[in-house]
Image (cartoon, rainbow, N blue to C red; front, side):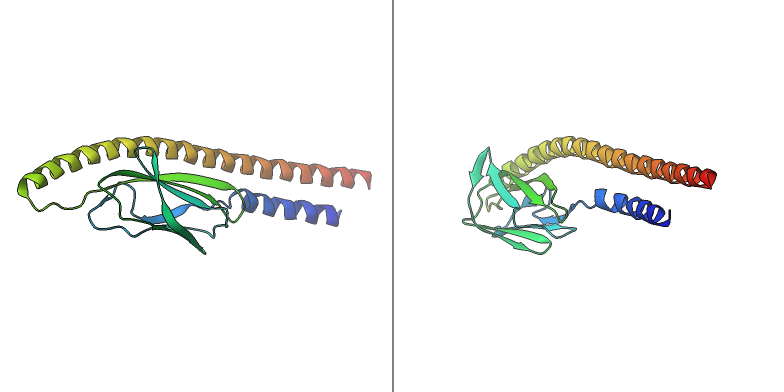
Length: 184
């Protein structure tokens, strides 16, 4: 009886920690929605937990992949070194990692490159383009936020699942203990 109780108690304690061990991105350079105005030599993604060697990073502009000279994984961060400076335009960083728990996690970061121009007329055009890009980025961020909200809904549903499992295990333990008491 004690072994059964201890085994069930052990399982009860382990279930929530097993299911909630996903690694999330904590910061990036460039950050989402950022307008880069200087030469960018590397892309740095920092995560909350350690990442495995199966992790990848891709940078695209207008659907065309930009080559990286190398990708370094250092504990909780992934660094993609660019083989050449980025031209003006909108870029998407698509990343995929295998977290500590082995689950694949993906995401994307939208940013744009806009090198400063010297002529005033060009600066006015750049300002207009930046405003247009910011509006587009805001629309994309809203879409991304909506998909993130869906992911948070998934997290809350997994929390509800965990709570239900705990309640069921408690009922099981209570029922088994009642059964053994009646037999004695």
